[in-house]
Image (cartoon, rainbow, N blue to C red):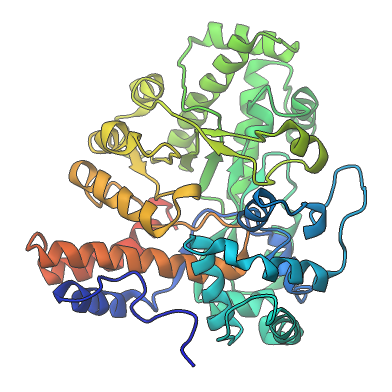
Length: 469
């Protein structure tokens, strides 16, 4: 029986480009994985306990899965997604898995289907399509394997050939799981990344209390502008002590500001008193992006900016289930004007790296590639989130390469909470890039030796260099 994935997946259908893509892919498919930004749980690697069951591993934590099922009428409670108030949800993992399998056809043509088929075949040895008929067989196969020591998190980390993975923790996190990993003596490299949204965004829930807590754990007076900035510097240094090489900023827009010290202090004082002026709150977020960039210039943390998502679009779902439940929606995003204050301040710094992501593909050729193609501090992150797909990756390369080239991009990062999908996501990215390079060779725009070098850069080297790993 044929497997779930084809050896020529995502390559040209025939001709010279197909053979070139095969050759390029053969040279990069087994390279180590560098995963510089993601959301896997450091607790997994710290405790190294078996994953509980197929549903908890593959369905319950993955918003790519449950958002699609919810769109077709499946309740989140029936998929085991916990509620904030503790109201009942499905707790039988086999029932959750069956419900998922019955609706697996919904993922036809999506990247989620590519990732999941890769996981089923290459991790669990399954070659039958998942559906209602095969659900229990697949569940039993996966559940049995998950009890084996070679399917524990650290063993999978090593089997996946992960060289380094970065998790993402909030500024108030004590990083206890990273400490446990470090103290365990295990050689797997798991680092953190500094995510300060909860203490730089006045619209973040509990913001003022978060500032109080920031002061407590840093020993700085976060009632003052100077003390607040010092608290960030201390926390950033603490994160660096656990391997952090980057910070991460998920603002609604890319808007930045560069106020005078006196004006920034006055704005902070109003925000600290609980200003409900929307313009002031937006300006504070904008100012803090520039402040974080200046700190990155000083301490060397790579700065990632992920703007343009309307977070928690459904207030009902947010109130019942909380964040990250599939209701974050892309919006139009301005970069050229929005980033100018930050770029006027630090954009020409050669030792600073600011990595820009977008959910607005219309900005690729118009704004992002030209900006990254001239400002030394700027690099372009890969096709991200909704565009982490074969078509999205192709569009990214087609629309940015002509202006930014390859070397103002940073390779690939998987940005995932779904640990087993990491090899699948990197495999898709490597295949798409090899196919793109093969087309350039076939069109006589690249020599084959250049394409082989670029394939390795895109799969491995650029991410290590950009993220200082």
